[in-house]
Image: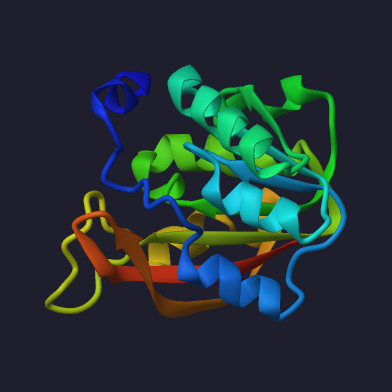
Length: 192
């Protein structure tokens, strides 16, 4: 995955935060320590950190993280970025009150989604909030890779996994080829 960044910007790298993240921030959705799982070059993490929150961005792509660190330094924003496998977050040795996932969940298969939910649970406590923005399977414009159904989201984050879905609503993921957006789900999920 890291090699995607060697040839220039990845299709999901906009050089700005996703609109859904900006909207959530405006609603006061983020609090405490924030984890950005699959942060890429860090735009969402940097935006949230610019609001004064402690943010850790993790990704498997060192090239993307190097770009994120350079952006943080250039902008004078205090955010940390480390290489980590989203399926083994317990290795971080940290806990978070808020987790952001923009475009990571839909890359996992069914078994990996269960592991991912457990991994997220290992770094969050009761009452933590998770926000997942993933490609949707709904509508004629459902053209994102690996579109996800509401049922798949609910199966991955059901009560037996330590999570409870508060809501799943239609939204958009902006990409470099479609800044208006590709159909997505925005799931608001609580740690039980």
